[in-house]
Amino acid sequence: MLIVAISVLFTNNLARSLQEEEQKNMAIWAEATQQLILADEDADIDFFMSIIEKNTTIPVYICDKEGNVLSSRNVTSAGKPGDHGPIELKIDDTTTQYIYWDDSNLLTRLRYVPYAQFALIFIFIAIAVITMLTGQRSEENRLWVGLSKETAHQLGTPISSLNAWQQILAEKYPEDEYVPQMKRDIDRLQMIADRFQKIGSEPTLQAENLIPVVQNAVTYMRARISNRITIDDSCLNEVNRTVMLNAPLLQWVVENLLKNAVDAISGEGAITIQLHENEHDVMIDVSDTGKGIDNKTQRRIFEPGFTSKERGWGLGLPLAKRIIEQYHGGKLVLKSSQVGVGTTFRIILKKPENS
Image 1 (cartoon, rainbow, N blue to C red):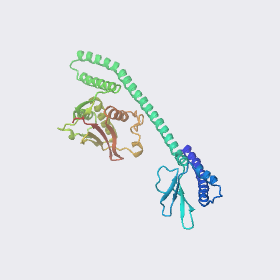
Image 2 (image 1 turned 90 degrees about the vertical axis):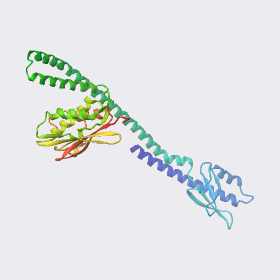
Image 3 (image 1 turned 120 degrees about the vertical axis):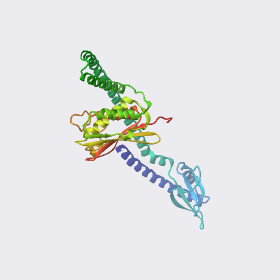
Image 4 (image 1 turned 90 degrees about the horizontal axis):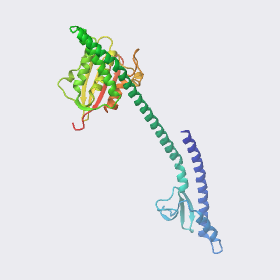
């Protein structure tokens, strides 16, 4: 902007000087034309003609008193008189014509130089910003993929070991009621490892009914929260909403939103799931009656590493947003939040094209 401002000032000064010079030249040109008209037989006509013919750049119009163009010079198409003038041109005692002129092409182009510079600078900045953002996004993608694959790899070995120990315990204590519970927890760990593995690669989307996926997430969370918190998922009964999805990853996102809703509720509260749809999308709203999110925090909730929890890592919502927006081609947004009232997150998923 500083370069453009300096360029504008310099160019305007230069253009103003050039315009003043052209105005002086037109005054000389008009005087030469006047003298040529009034010249007698002894006058030096060649001198006046040389002055007139030297004007090869400034468009000139000679008009009558009504403004009609009688003749012109350096003009491609004679139309209205020029923007500058007039200078009176006495033809005889009863006839007066008027000289008008426009800026030369050089002066006109000079006025556009700052705008051209501004356009070039803007294009340069835009390319630089796009390149930087693309590189940053590429780096984030590599980081997410690497983190996910490494997490899945690190979980794989202890999960395999736990599976082996669980089988030994099941054979040795077939009647023990805790062994099946251990198996369920190991299966849960395996599912988490599989989810990380899917994030580390390009997941496959299929046209599926999202209702069972959401219900599975609700069932899982309902068994692990206080009886003082209710989850209303009545909207899921006897409906079918087919969208393009990857079931394990979408269930993970819904579980994450439900867990955040539970964490936001202090004591008693309610979580409500609602479904909406339009011609192209299906929307899942997860609302809670928790503490809400203040305006300052709302702007940062999807930033990796940002958390308002004492023991949080700040990866849940960014990862959920990545799953929905980059893998599913949908959107995850904070629909509304009010401190002391509650929060609503919205998941937007695309319907199959042929639906």
